[in-house]
Length: 490
Image (cartoon, rainbow, N blue to C red):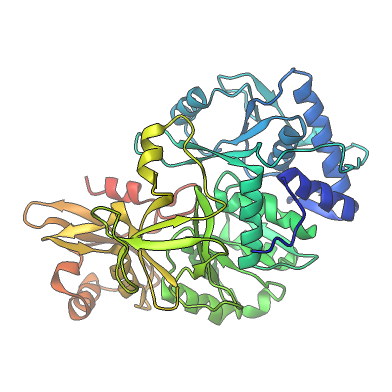
């Protein structure tokens, strides 16, 4: 892949954007707005405070919600010569405490004083009256091999796995995001995914800087408010993410094409999209969702693009210099042919090197030069990747592998169902049995839904239960929380 950009670090992205357009608005919320020049001044002020503590090349935690303060903190840490660790703001106290004990940061930047470690407490009022500053290219530098961000991926032990992404790796991610979802100058971004999540980090922190874009940061995910801001802020790039986000917006009353005339780019990812969601979004907005696939360990992996082709229901084709293979689920060593379902393994220049301090998990995930994703899918003859399920979510019914997404797709084809999640429940006779959690647009007798499944599915794939909820629980990354749903069956 030919690199169109000269940036070698994440800090370079900010330096170049600020030098090109110092008076342009970089980030704004419902209450505050910073030009690039004002933002740089804020970053320098906080970086000086960090430097006053004699901290250099150390881990510094960021425990803040999506906000202007989060962006200031992230770049201030880089300017001060330290390594930013992105801590999920929704973590409960016990989980946060365990993560901090494992990370051992020198300091944590937060708006809360309840943290165990030494903290720098920040509030937006301290950065509102600063004179603008410039960032000459020689003033602040980061080497490509240095750590640009510490992110966390889910762990089997309950403690998230630490991933140290270098600046070089992040820039490779940025380039491939731009390859998949090309942007222009004067883009206005609205991102709802947490900045601590790889998708939210790329679409909310790094990629808007490529073309000196403007980022609007909502206070919370309120579907009605998001729809309003898509219009009033003239948003051109909506970093929606998982299908649950798009489904929530589609449920807003009077959500029509005429209401969002500026929208141009709608990336999707984080979970497989039901075909019905693609269809409804396109019908109501006139804009397609360009679905892609990635994970904290390597992102993006594949993307649907105008130039290289799209296939509804797929996650697109491999991004440049990236290899995707499907291998057998049992051993992970036998490469399968196109059309065969197995585990997805990938490798590319933007992949992680290891899980910090976790040799066992590293050896499980990194094998034969590939990242074993734990996702189940297939490649078609043209190279389009379709993801069926997570390996751990496959339901084993009477010796058969049942993939939840197949059932979910069937149920979503029914006009009275608005969302669905299928999980496995232990069963004495069959080992496991599928259970469908659904939300409804209109009241309907469950027997009608069950009859539809019996008429369209193999018997062992028909859910044994249909549980109607007002809404499906979501994780902080806005994916359906399967753990919470499974707990309802206990």
